[in-house]
Structure formats: C-alpha cells, structure tokens
Image 1 (cartoon, rainbow, N blue to C red):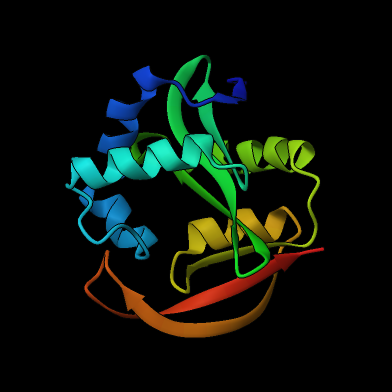
Image 2: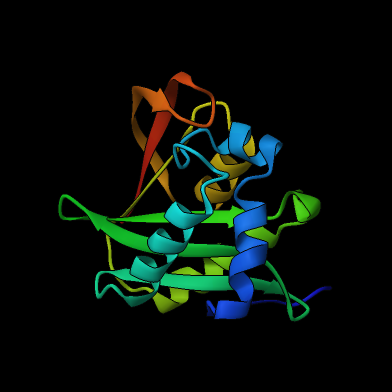
Length: 157
C-alpha cells in the first residue's frame, strides 16, 4: 500500500498546488473556490498568509514522498474549519481519507467544522468516514460554478 504522509508546505510545492487548485474538474467539484483560480498573485498571497498565520494549520499531503495535495484548518467566526484538496490524478484511492486521519491525529481542536458542495459525494464520504456529521445545509454562491450551490455543513466533536 502506498504511504500517505503530511509535512509542512514548502516553497517548492507552490507551483504544483497552484496547478492542482485550478484544474477545471477539481474546481467544479469543490465549487467553493477562489474567485479566479488562475490568479497566481492572489494564490501566492493566500498561501503566504496561510503558511504564517497563527490560527491556520496547513500541511502538504504526500503519496510515497510525492506531493498530491494539501490539508488545513483555519478559524472562521470562532469555529475551526477543515479543508483539503487532492490532485484529481489520484482521486478514488483513499488518499484524502488517510490524510484526514493523520491530520485529525495532529490537530486536537474539537469541535471541527467542514463544508462541502452537497453533490460532492467524494469529499462528503471522506468526512463522514472520519466521523463528521452533517448538521445542516446552506445555499451559497460558489465561484467554482458561478452559481448558487447547496453546501453541506458538517461537524466533528
């Protein structure tokens, strides 16, 4: 079985992460993305903040030592929310689930919150298998689809 691991995000990861986060199918699936996934200046500013902020934990996801995504948590209105992004080339191989399990071992804050497009069955399945429960839904504008999308709201105690 391939080894999934987490490590700090390095400068050398940024080009690959930028490419992953602007893949059209990934953007459509995630729905709630940056306004313009092709805006490298905005991406770099976001990553610089995410890598240095005290209230953000950001990790690179690796598969057998190769970067395949990122996972992190951040505080929104007092709630700690988790997010993850896995390269579409490795979807369906259990990598997000293993990365989330590793991350939950490192981040002891509870409750944790998460959000996912209501039709993103992959991400919702990863979150539910990790113990997150759907606590509600909300319809919000999703830049990745340029439309209002139902979003599932989840919580892990």
